[in-house]
Length: 401
Image 1 (tube, rainbow, N blue to C red):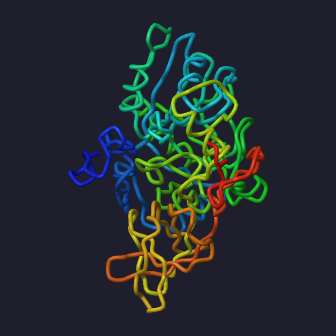
Image 2: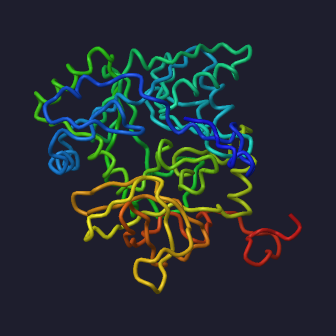
Image 3: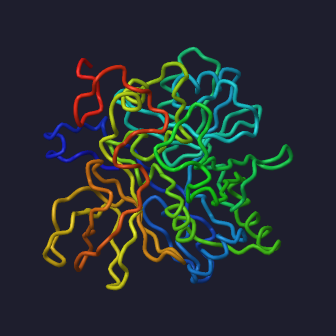
């Protein structure tokens, strides 16, 4: 990522405030040599966006019969007898007693509670594996935090690659290191702003990452194809992720993001564990305040064949057709779903009415969009403690605080 502009610095942002959403690609997948392969971009550079038939690939993945090259992801390995209690003490996750082959995820927060790193977590009994899009930055931060503890940190991205599978199962004792996505099921100690697990659109999405030696990536894909699976690109996996409202640090996170805004307290934050950096903000917003922004899914009007880019402004609609009103947020992820059509995730102001008609800026015009609520406008979690006194009107905080 580049540093902030002079205008950003003048506005109060500093280099330390910038969230390292993803790091430049270090490897180009050999699967991009496949006939028809179209390369991805941004956080998915280095792997295929699709292999010539994205709709068929997406349907195969939705049926549970496709594999996705996820070798653009980084891998950090943490060994040593103190690894779990140490990671527990410095991140948002409950890890001190994590059993082997039990998947979870963690966030590294700034002192002000902003998301700096996110990682999938799996321990194999001898080491903890962290799958992330910021392996160099995360490994460097962990190295600075180890002090005199018995831990060994290594960025092993050059040796290991990830394959995505539509399977909802942990890896077995005789399987490779495997992380099963816990989303959207609320973990013990977590909470939710959105719907209960059984009503959540992500409850039907099966997804896991299998780590394979990087030099065997092509062979591992060939073995799955021999078993009847097809190869799908990130067009397919991203469409199903957006449908599931699943936040991704490389796309949904910016320098101001706190976990509450993305409903990430479901799977990545334990509210009742010991102190860690950023915990004060997590507790304060959960107990007293309301997240300043909220995640929404947008159903985009595809009739004009205009599709916004990530980062596009989200505006209130006006009475004049096509005229952009006040900007209320930004698009974070865009996808073409095989059933829903063009959809997107966006982060908007919490105060925006949940039924407000919206327009999204596009090259060549604007496209209308309808919200599907992910984090409700009132910004209150299901287990927010009851106030102990009168609330300041409209703020949700005790006037004495």
